[in-house]
Length: 174
Image (cartoon, rainbow, N blue to C red):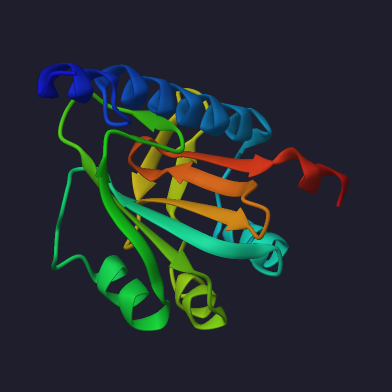
């Protein structure tokens, strides 16, 4: 078999990479569909959501939507307070698919120290008007964030730069 034919039938073929990406996308979509939109109008609401998910959280995923910013204080603090599990450039993360500049995604093992740090923020963003929908960014910036449990289930995520937050529906019974 020629090297060209071996490459096209190998594990890294375009077809197999596309199939793997589609499978991953479907898994993320399924998890996103289990989450429902929530409001973040006040610091107290923000804190209540953090309290609700903290004990179930195993991993925290932070995404810089516009690519790498090595001076980003949120990422720098996360790296100091939590073990980094993975780092990758991506065009798809919870709540977002982009054809533009890839984002930088960081996956960390959750620590109480980082949750304590998150509690120092007013919120990920603050909704300022329900109709028409308006929001303002806070000191958290435009990073997106997701919280994952030990089974890999999505608990909570934001598309902060769009002013959207979603909570897993299992928390509605609480």
